[in-house]
Picture 1 (cartoon, rainbow, N blue to C red):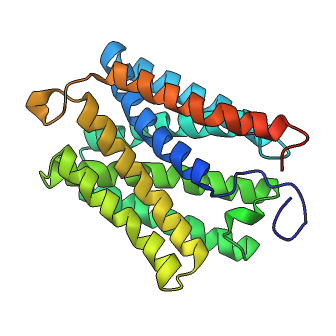
Picture 2: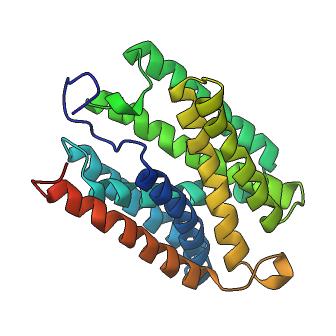
Length: 250
């Protein structure tokens, strides 16, 4: 149930399992996007990503309560298509990473303003109606696009490389954690701050593992990285689904 007992929550609580799956999904989205564009014509890859994204999100929106398998499938689809969309803006339109990151940040801020204006509540604990869930997913999609642009900005635009970007975003994600636990930051602000940072952190890890050595990566290959993080996602989500289906689980 929601925190106020008004109905079933449609999204997960931000537990440790949630953050692990979220981080894995960001790396998965980056790797799958890179792999699909490499093995398929880019237009075809983007179209397939879009169809998968729409189908997964439509399935999720039909759920009346949080269902781990369906929810995380939607997150993975958002991760793949969100990466593609952010890359298309840079490659096709030629916008610098700093500009695209600023645009996505403005979009996300606007969504939060509208969400607050209509619902007076940005907490993920109270996503119990379809309208609130629509705001939630709009914000999620925007965070993926913003995070992708931020990761590309540091690794490529500023020339830091992938490994230093991992360290940078790992440090940044500790800021809302410490702010919430030590400084009394608002929990909603801390959640969305951390949520945005998981995207460039996971994407930087995937790029570092998958990119060729000449580009600053390890050279494992985006296909193998995609498979590895898909298995990680399955290993994390299957126990969540079993606990949800177990009538005696707490």
